[in-house]
Image (cartoon, rainbow, N blue to C red; front, side):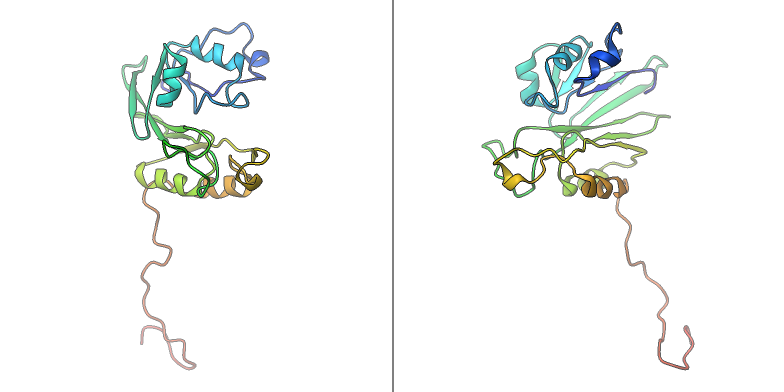
Amino acid sequence: MGGRTATASPRRPWPTLCAGRTPASGPSLVSHDSHADNFDDFGRAFALAAPLLLTTTGGADRLGAPAKGLAAWDTHTLTRPDGGELTVTAVPAVHGPEDGERDAEGEVNCQVVGFVLAGDGLPSVYISGDNASLRTVTEIARRTPRIDATILHAGAARVPGKFRERPVSLDSVRAAAAAAVRAGPLPDRHPARPRRDHRPGRRSGL
């Protein structure tokens, strides 16, 4: 975007796709570093070779330089080659059911973030991270002026013996519902209309 290339949560089969390529000119965006299905050894090496890695606050502590930790609603601004700015905003994510057991930090499963990328003259892009919560998607839509494109981490991942086998990422139904959530304030589903008289023989508005 804006002359910057960002890589989100790289993992296999990235070796096939990226063999012989130099690291991204922009940041690596890592939703969380705790699980190998999201961030395997290759993804870790590739992401850490970028000039900047944006991730959770805990992930940045574990990964070290060039990682920078962002809490939900923190922003980081990059200068674009055209002189403009690209703003990366970390947004909330819940890596499991809303009513799942939470740890001492209030996280379900582990600390996770998503991202919104935006800038003047650029589309606004939402990257969900490993989020399973529609409530969280709705909150992001309400607080973000505009979302032009959405990249959802789906797949209905489950952890045996945890959360009663419920998904820790979006399944197909929830992914479709998340994609349908509109950016910005949600419209009134029942806008005011002229009263109608439905009694036989009556005409509306009379």
